[in-house]
Length: 235
Image 1 (cartoon, rainbow, N blue to C red):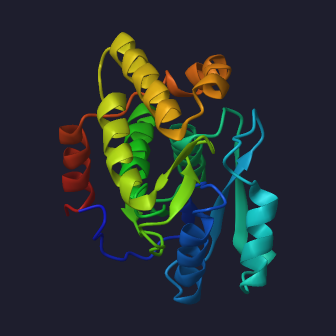
Image 2 (image 1 turned 180 degrees about the vertical axis):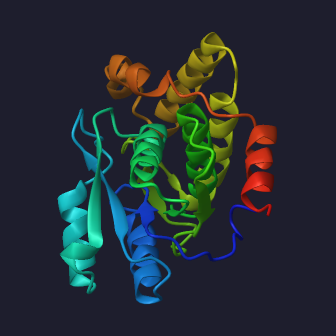
């Protein structure tokens, strides 16, 4: 349902942050939505707190969009004071859309990332108790599935095909009710990734930073997200 969402016109489309390896998927789709008059504005993550090492920043993304014909007046930065990750982006975006009084919004993410981005948005809307915002999906353009790329704060190296599985695992971990279970699962994933990439010693030095950025995410259960979709698409 997320990957095949129908197109709805909306005031704006938010482009979820990505690493340099995957940014073109999101940026190309955002520019296309503007050209097709589906939206009149693109929203970008404006990291104002601790920087996400995987995201190049709003300046780089604005420059790329400008080179593709997007005017500066068509781009708005969404300030985010927290460490830049999918859920913190979703919370900042939900608040911004609520403050603007919007009823609809489109989100764009890389194909392997779209599902987690949407679940994060629904979770953020529930936390904000903004029950009037209808969020729709438009998936980023497809890049080679067998290409190895950096993802997830710029610390995970895998093919885009393998990232599909990794994203599903993350969703499952973040949906767990127990914080202790989420912390344990995060730690196991961290070590498995380090062993797979052959960077165990280097990765161990990053544990405090990693724990700080990953332990607090708690996503809604799948059944709750389906209820949101039922409400969104209802009369």
